[in-house]
Length: 394
Length: 217
Image 1: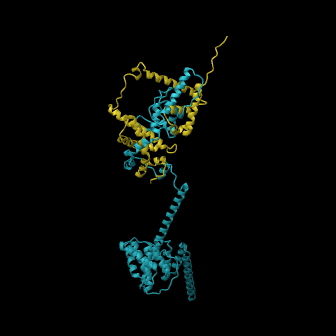
Image 2 (image 1 turned 45 degrees about the horizontal axis):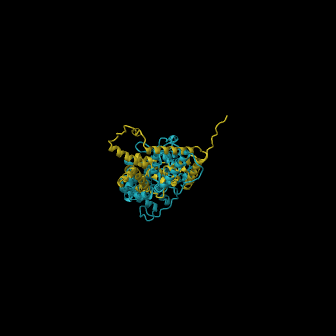
């Protein structure tokens, strides 16, 4: 700043001294303009200087947050209570204006680098990328509190590149869960639809060659046999072949597994290989436990062999097995259906009518129900004819 | 993931929880010039012409200080303005550097032994020298100037008065004063304020005083 001269009227000695002091102040400042960091020789503080503020308080002057330096030099953040006790900005400025030590500290800490200082800093080892890289690796390995990515972004005050609404993640989660459920359901359905039991049932329905039912099979009309019993499997349904392959694979690893042996016997019945089927099923029944399922399959094998060979004994054994199965599972419509059929075959018409009625009570499938009604009606008709015929004879 | 485009404040918050050497590399690269500058200045105050190795040691201590107590300083840092972390870094650097030399000198003097002068400096020199008398007189005059500045707070505010003394007595430049966020002015604004205060002060000194009339009768 330049001197603002003002020729004026003569001053008294006191005023003259003041004017000289001001001029000297301006002159000294102008003379050291080129070396602003030189020693201060303008005199002692003019007024009563208050105790110097803590180092951290000066940060307020720079728009930063207040910190205070403790005895060991640790920077501590001041809370609101501390700030109220801390000097105001004007008081800080006023103190620095009067206290050479604080003014120097302020300049030392906050002044920009002079060209000379910049050169010196650039020549330090700490300015080299190698030195900085080693230090960075050392610092990165220091103990830290870990944050999750979301917290980390929040801590860094970063906004994601694409801001997504909060419920985006909720809907994404719901969608993912629904997809997983659907996948699980589809897998379960596929596995269920492709069990050997289901494949055998489908093979039965696809080409129903006898009256007796097997578990799980849908209704189909009985088609006349077009091949020799126990012959080649060229014309057998694909599902039957798939089921057999699956059963054989399992039996390779567990040859004595009763479940897979029973399924093998059932497939034998469908292929009209009754002897091996009876052999397997009798063995399983002898080994136990005796189940209605085993008895049902064994009865089918015996009955079909009896039909094929004309063996009364086999058909009688079939009825015996079915009666036993009926005792174990009196509400099983498949057992009741087969039992009624075999009873009819064995000439037990009255028992068959009763069994058909029980079957109609428990069956839920409409087509099997219709078939049951038709068979019962036919049986009743036959019985009526028989009664009429007997009445005529009498 | 390294975000080299992050502001200094964001980078500090990232590194507060990061173990990524690349992120720390960027942090160190940006902070080292400032830490070195403050370390160099304080080392000069203590040693006159410090060795580069001493300054490098202090710089390393500054970064280690930031990482103490699971990086507490960086974790607790809350931005108060653009790149305000650099202000905090300046303070931490000054604190660490000062402490570095206090430790060194304390060790040289036998640890925690504190030397206390037997007599206060003023008492050792009961008779003021001529130079001291001149300084006292100058100090008194400056106090009178300051008193004049304080006498018209509606014209010369507290801040303008501080600018005046910072500039003329402490040797701050207008740019340095403007660099203080508390000033709220540009360098030109500071210069303008200084000019206004100086003109007013000179006029106040030279203003004729009303002549006191002797009381009559």
